[in-house]
Length: 244
Length: 244
Image (tube, rainbow over all chains, first blue to last red; front, side, top):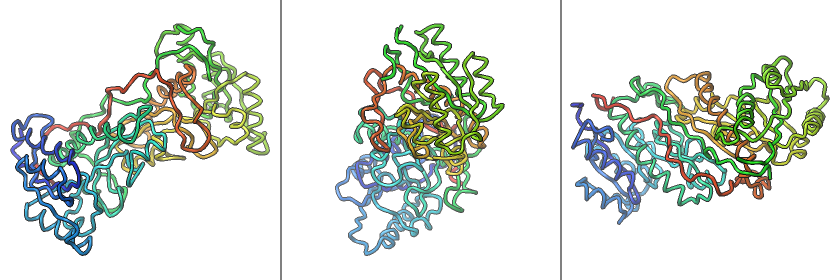
């Protein structure tokens, strides 16, 4: 029900691209029916990948989106690589950059070209478990509730302002693989919702990037408190037997 | 539907005692109807408080539970204070110690007397935001999902094995007070569920206390994955307007 033109996304990926697929699907829903609550008023203008043969390239091609392979072997420094990234993004008139499993640290070259316009998704409830192997970190810490976070990228590792989070219960017997799978499913919903918030003009950056740990404000108009909460483990059946 | 005798709890508190009240209420439900899923097959054997006039004392008295004031001014050291604590707990045949807003660090004197039998509740999703002012820490970090944790107490500050956690959304405009209130409501449910797990014999300590960050195993018999998950902020209404 909006006449605003679609927000142009640039998605950077290195692997299978399941978050890319979630964004592509939500954009397609938006083209079919703008009033669909799971739709996105956006379009993926370009997908950039640094790994030859990665499945994300195929997903982009299948969706009719330009898929560009930008190997780092061709760039003598991270900064020069990012300069090529920026040139490609700008050539496709990208407004918002979405890192989606892009296994490469970005530099200020990208962040200065897209200030407060680079999103990342991380498989933990930040600030817990930054960096690599976040899901295994959560298991090692004995967390009962894990999750994922969409955040704005700053120059630190997973330190930028949080935009949205999802909670996922840890099950007894979970391995890095089984828990990662359940978190991934939430990542897809989270990333779409995060871009919805931005495309819908609901994010206020006025206080956003001045310093680390500044929170991102969401404009009024969001639904008030949900009744859904998560207690984990859930209420157990009563059993005979006292304390072990 | 169980014939096991009630687990004897010792609750240590310093303040208003709302978590104590939740435990007292659940114990009372257990006496009325053991099949009530919100009931606890336990009884509060004693409440110990270190602050004269604290409301928790009144709550204990109203429930007909011995309420003992143990001021630290009478003990020359933390260890001697804890020795008096242990003597009082043992005199009341306490099997499980529940810290419920007890504003005092405990020492190995208590932990050795009740190995793996001291629980605490903390208003964050540990390991995030340990120590004081956890709710303000979460707000300062821009977390979108906060929560609370019931954990076993070890010699660190909020470092012991996690038993149960609850997630609580952070609302835009939340203050330490408003967010604390919503977390408190979940604390009550969490603490009751944590004690249910222990009273029901569902917690396996075999791997529990050998070292920090060891996870507590829950026995089989817990419900499998809940369908409830929490994504925050929730899906926003679509709005006109592109990126700001």
